[in-house]
Image (cartoon, rainbow, N blue to C red; front, side, top):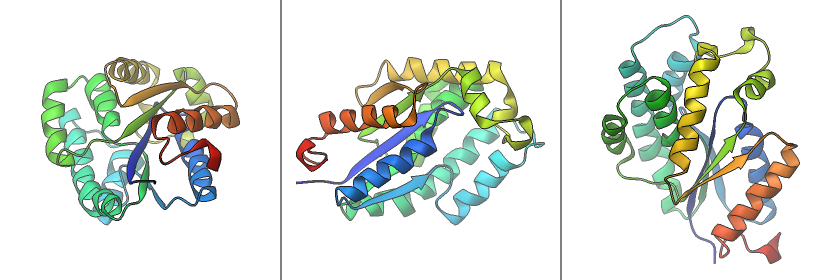
Amino acid sequence: MSRSLFIVLEGVEGAGKSTQVRLLSEWFESLGLEHLVVREPGGTPVGEAIRAVVLDRGGLTMPPETELFLMLGARAAFVRDIVRPALEEGQIVLADRFDLSTFAYQGYGRGLDLQKVSQANAVATGGLVPDLYLVLDVPVDQGMARKGGPDGRDRIEKEGPEFLERVREGYRALTGTMDNARMVPAQDDPGEIHGVLRDILVGAFPETFSTHRV
């Protein structure tokens, strides 16, 4: 019997999250699993508005604390209006980013105190914890090469390699302390990475992703 699950893909810029979310969604569909694909920040009207401020306004500067609370404001609506209702309906929620991004980007990247970030994040999530984080790891230079030239980069991507190296280190440090997180090298062919993710999901949740249904 399948059950509702909250699965999150995380990683530094250019790690291939969007591609892997799409491939996993196609796999879920082939298995007949009801699921919802979402992204963060976004998903709700207020979340999309905040996304436009935080990411799309490349010339905008803001204190790290402002960036943090904008992201958490989007998350509160995301959890209340999108994720919890879908989980209560028995769906699998497959998210492109969630709160691990906040610890990596605003904590390690911006230098905000991790304990204070955790306390504020707990308010935004209402205690909701993903069943599994799949963290795609790629060297910063390779990830940025995948993103193309600076004209197509968002505000965060324009912070430069030193910032993104701190973010990557944050992901690696955080994942090493979490029982519900798996780090996956993401330098190779997307199809091979997808196969690794499928194997992880089958191993972690055999009652949902049974091998005989693949």
